[in-house]
Length: 287
Image (cartoon, rainbow, N blue to C red; front, top):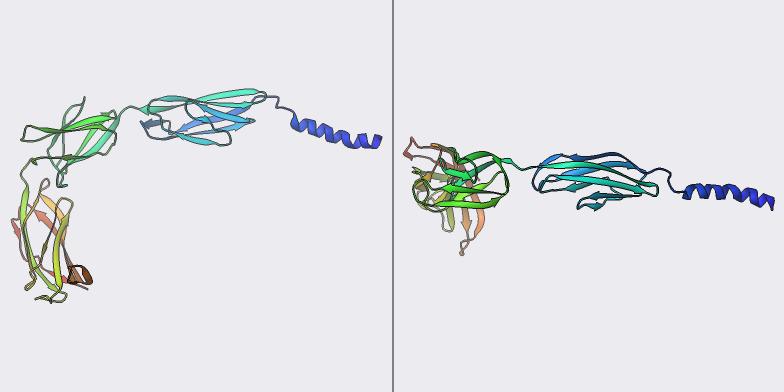
């Protein structure tokens, strides 16, 4: 009997030690927000290091975070978050603040209805001084509190366009209606050669396109000669417009659907308002 008691006694003492409640409350070693300052709606990461806790909770709004070491929050106003760590011996708390910056700098662009940048367009973010878009249609306004309203003023006609409740720091604003300013205008012409050559065989088509940030246009090359012409390539803004000519020839079926690629031509072309017409912009098609 004594042998049995001597054998069981250490086991009972060990079990008692393992189930005994902690004698001190938990320790919160750190509780931080990264970044500590955000714009409204942007996230901040709350992270912490805690020892001796059985439960963890963050107030306000977050709730239980037991078993984790971080959580993301996106407050709309400056908010102080409190982490509470608890065990059987008590609890500990620590707070950190996420500051919501009520203002930001917006850097946007004003476009015409056709997607071209609109220079020298008056605009105003409500409550702030009026500004004007630059030669590339871009503008910058500091100290804007989202959500914000912005109004575009037409240069010559008595109307304006207002955007309400914007929150982006890079808005793209489109001026509808008659477009202000006098557009630049040039003509471009040339000849396409190569491919199946010209006159083109039946069922073949050669299309020429001009592409740039502000202008996109296309036309078909003459079936017999390969000649092409753009009478008007028009844009607003800068006096020089980098772009390129592309020519593509393909064979199509009776329904007009492409069935075989023949060749492609390419020619860089920067338009300049000092030039009225660009002649002899010839391209050779390569397979």
